Image (cartoon, rainbow, N blue to C red; front, side, top):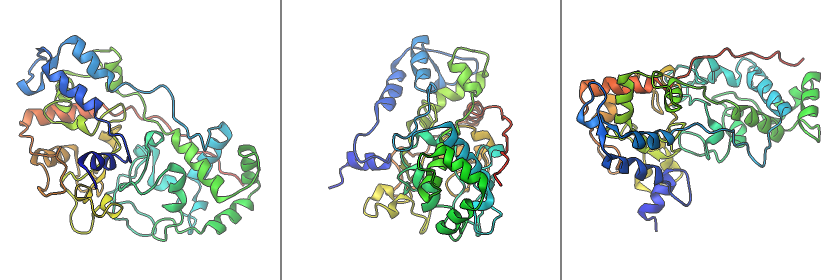
Length: 361
């Protein structure tokens, strides 16, 4: 029997152990004494200094990338993965690479409402920022690991890159530069589907969001963000309830929820768990890192701006049995909506130049 506890675990992509500690900590902070920032409403007040330090600690950046024990990192493997990521040889028509949809200049997405491969897709292209920390992937969570994504997803999909595994392996084997790169990266020197996937996954785990103004603020620079953004942070972790799902340094709990947007046969995680009411129309919580550069928003690209997203949550989306219990009308004031946007904009790091590698010949 699916108990509420099990349903919550599935919503977070887990088969056991829910993670409510952070939520409880955040909720507990509402009992602390408050000081006000300039212009702050009663719903967006500032905790005591000790409370704010504790709250900020919930969003501290990790110190190391968690590479897979089954696919250990090496410079050679990451370099090979980078070459493959940029190479249109991975597509059947020779014109599309992974970078075509996951453009580093657009925070590793494409700026389109729906992804575009051989055909237009039904979903928005998710960013690759911080995928190393994701336990499962895909808007509906059907990829069990990053190593699985490449061939179970875009490369062999007739509507996206449309490349047959055997043809790709043969094409890479015919290129001396790739033969040398695989020899350096793998002890068996072989060019195989598994090694292609492992190299791509290793490189993709190195795609980590940069230091943003918010990070500098929680590290102690009080001037890194303005008063509006600080009020927005209090709303984000308080009245607006955003941090219940967008938690931690990457601003996602990696869970799956119906937030009241999808309709029809766009049923999300219910394709995997068809008998679980709360997973109908449930999609993965995306990271909010670099969010100001990643419009449009939501799994289907339905919201054009951050203001549109906030309006959606303020309304509470579509009221139905599957809608998450966390989603309800917020009754935000116009000023509070502006403050939330000001805070969200502090999560975007300055862009850095990306070097396009010289591809092997």
